[in-house]
Length: 454
Image 1: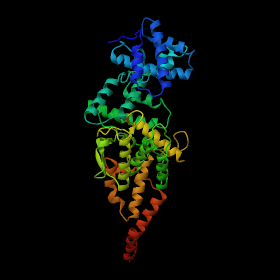
Image 2 (image 1 turned 120 degrees about the vertical axis):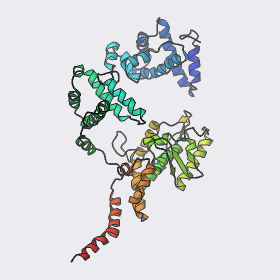
Image 3 (image 1 turned 135 degrees about the vertical axis):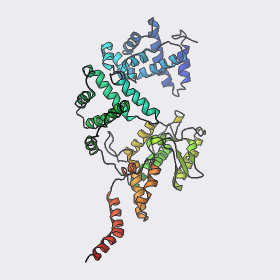
Image 4 (image 1 turned 60 degrees about the vertical axis):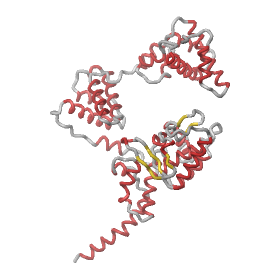
């Protein structure tokens, strides 16, 4: 085993070679950053915070501030590699990150590059999760709910925020829980905070009743949550023409270094709209989940722990077959467990974040969303549009949508029909078809009732 720093720089050379960087300029940048960092380490007796500060100061004469911080990512990956192979005993950046109780390394580097690193690191410190007087009780409840099979992802976020507030306000440690909640409710003035406080009260009430069943149940207050619901943005319903325009833009998406990407984006968009898949469901599709012979796809273990098999139309199956053929010709893995949407440059599946960014960019290029910001139609509105346009097709075909809603709920992966009703946005066309159906069916009943009167 080689101990770093090694005088012959073999670890740096081997590490850069294993990265398989395609561009010579990129390899040069990596070697410059790593060699300059090793030069600074060799001048010091120990790999610690002082080495990191010294390297940042020495690099300030060579690179601009933004370029220097970009080079720190190279150092982060290299230190993680050295720690993994046992060439170093500790990673000083990881130690500082853990000491501050944060997840990312970049804030640590920014603090070290400041005029007073110690003060900047102290400002980064975040309280340890579930470290307050109620922390053990809340952590025990989270473990209990997850052991029962619940995902329980949103509730721990509320509990951690409340726990952090208690740690930053130690004077409340000895107060009753009601007093703590009153101070927490007045700590923020945002529109969503009252609703979050109400949800937190419900969770804490459940925790206390689990520990002491004699405690009377708390009566929930639905007003804060309803008030927040009024501020929700109304979903944008894409018309079939909008979807066609987005599909055309996806096919011609500029990607000179990844020729398969335009077809991949086109197929992603098609699956998100035609099959009503969530973005995470699109990202988790495997090659083995596609059954072209039967025209179905299998969506495994998604929200609510549901696995469902979805039938697809012949046109969608034909597009999938064309994409899978192009994927095979591009050299993608043919293993059933490999990702359906394969990234040529990384030889791995697209992440859900990458898929969301690409599809939102298509929506922007179609002129349906502003060039920047979170305003305008959302990616998830494709799912809303699929529901509304499907109901419109049922009306045009003379089918009663109410009879088909349980099937639609199953297709979308919902627990019950109530979740599906949220996706039914009343548009002018949908209202027109509903009125026409009532006129054809219900109006006759009203006329019969009037004739029966004396």
